[in-house]
Length: 294
Length: 206
Image (cartoon, rainbow over all chains, first blue to last red; front, side, top):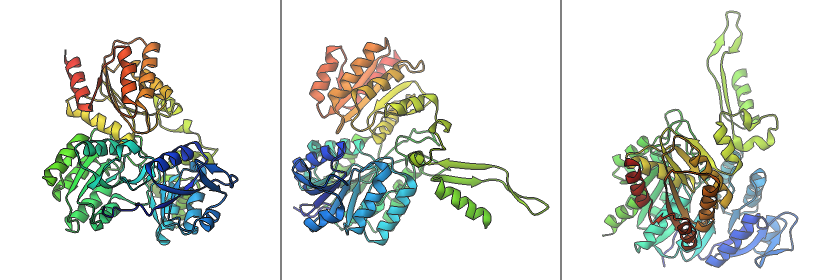
């Protein structure tokens, strides 16, 4: 098997907020998927175990016992999530996946900036996480969807839509190298363009699917980068929110057309100008990818 | 300079997404006066701003009501009621309705891992909305379980009398059981959102 991006068989995971309902449930699912979950953290719960995984009071203690931990996944409630991000960064963890929803934007602004200075990759917040099928899953993506590794890399701002498109690809016999849910908040650690750059470098990924939505300018920036000729692999896009009215937040905090920015038309135009086909429906993504594979 | 500093202080201290003074006037005696001000506060930061309440926001009654059940609801102007799970899929469903030449009446996202009760409350909102002629439910079960969704649908129908046709696309986790639960009350399910939308399209044309 090839390489994939972000997570693979060498990923050793720490779960922050492991004793909470979501943290505990998804620890079990990650273990079932085959992810190497080696430790968890919940302050005040050190010494317990969750699904056989030892729990520590602090990230530092967990790392002292398991120095090979290289990735953390955060389920800590929004009010305390920022503190746990700093704790992971300061302990030296280089990849942090933040599942927690509703983290204040100002908190995200600060820790995303801090992580960049420390050379740490943050995925999220408010994201479904990352999976390299059959190797490792650091996230909450449903196990039964990710059953086939292969040539398609997916980067997405949406959860359910990603599962749906992944499912249809697998049904069509097309596996995925890595699927990255970058999150639906206005401030996130890693954007679409950064993930596409990783896919471009990854020998296993041959085709790239970008699932975007209205709001922000991530898709426009990606299109500009593709226009500069730096992406050699075929890219197919889908953008949701064509019919969303301006000024209204559509579920995701980041999905809003405001002050004339982030409209569907602007994103589609940007992609079309650099010959990236944009699917009209989620299922059309599979058809477009098939045309390249043939 | 004082104005910029003060604005920055408001921005950071109040978790603002936007602080805008427009227009800012300079009077003949050299005083600066903010003639109009707009401040947008991040909803997610309200836990540390007890002096600010979400009730003061510009959300509609329905939107605030929906939030109580963990639903994201946005009222739109059309006549096809929409319920789906996940913001992206819900928007994609709106787009699909439009693709078939119809107008979505709402954005209703029951969220990832939706419970029976949130589905029930969400559907009740749509069934009691006079603008809505038919309802399209689009569920792709990942974390969300199709049987849980199906139970919520059935309970809503038990509580609200309706003659609005409902078209349900149910796929993913526990879909077999979900389909069975719906079949018991005579509701058909579709494999894809396109199929469900096509059926809906035919039904409201008549």
